[in-house]
Length: 222
Image 1 (tube, rainbow, N blue to C red):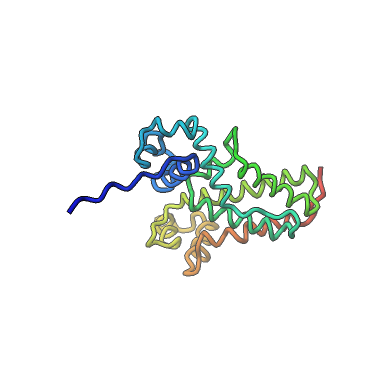
Image 2 (image 1 turned 120 degrees about the vertical axis):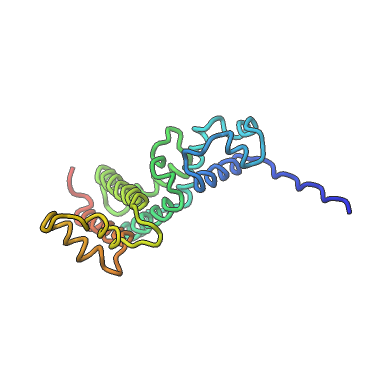
């Protein structure tokens, strides 16, 4: 019986190259991403990639644009607080899906339209909510600092899949002399060690604190 002919390889395109870069970074981390390894994952020679992206920087620009395209775009005409809460919740979800992107989102000197459009939408939502340009800049920076920082901490916590935060707290603080670090011990034993505790659950109240502060006087200050 004659063997089946090999399946024709899908033709390369910029979108396919960028999508493969995102997939490789998701699976192995951004440190593992190279043009040669990306070409191997696509089953082509490395030089073929340069017909679609000029260099690795352009590849990263495209990958960051893909990440921004997955984040909720706040509507300028909607209620600013609800829209920005949805946007921050969505941004955290997307960054946990693409952890390599946390340090790259605002690092690009040649950002794509999805990246720029996202920033424009956030600013428009704040302006539509009565914020001045300067207060909108403060709000935007504060919200992103909280989301990016929270995700970095969430990803870095040394908690195994089968372990809970109470186990970690007991391991870290179990050998302290009696009476040492009383405030930290109180938080660990009275709060972190509860069966229903999860660090992930700290995101919503933290975001609410920031939004409460922003809502107090959106147009106040310099």
